[in-house]
Image (cartoon, rainbow, N blue to C red; front, side, top):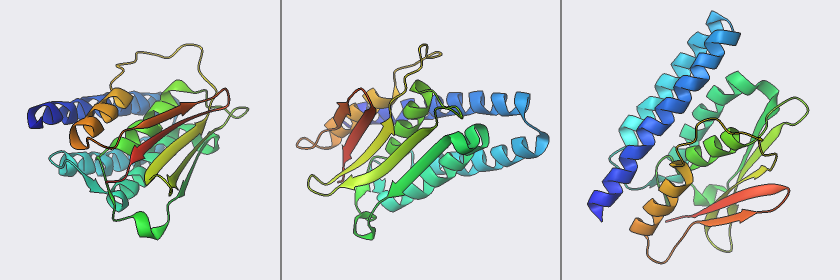
Length: 187
C-alpha cells in the first residue's frame, strides 16, 4: 500500500509542472515581462510547497489552503477577473487533514475543462459539508468543446490516494447540467 501511495504522489509533480509551464508559456507570449516575472516568483513559492509536502501522506487543511491561495494568484495572472475562487472554510476545520495537492488538482481540473472568458467567468467555491465532514470544491459547469492534452491523472489520483489512506471514507463526485462538485474527506 505504501509503495502504491508513493507512486501516486510522484504522479502529481510532473502533472503540476507540465500545466504550470503551459501557463507560463501563455503569459510570456501574451503578457509583459513584469507579469511573467511575478508569475515565476509565485510558481517558485508554489513549487516549494510541492517539494516540502511530497513526502507527506496528509497535511493540514490550513497548509493546503495557503498553498491554494498562491496557486490561485498564479492562475489569476492568466485569467484576470474571469476566474473567481471563493473559499469559505470555518476556522474549526483548518487543523483537519487532507491529502497534499488535492484541492489544487481539483481547481486545476476546473480550469482545464471549463470555458473561462469575460462572457463566461468560472467561479470555483471551496467550502465544508459539515454534515459529512468533507471539503467540497464546486464550479459552475461550462465545458470546453475540446480539452487540450489530458493525462487523466488529477481526479483519479485523488480517488486512489484516498482509497489507500482511508478504508471508510471516499471521494464524492456530483455533476449536474449547471455545476460539477468533488468532495474529499477530512481526515
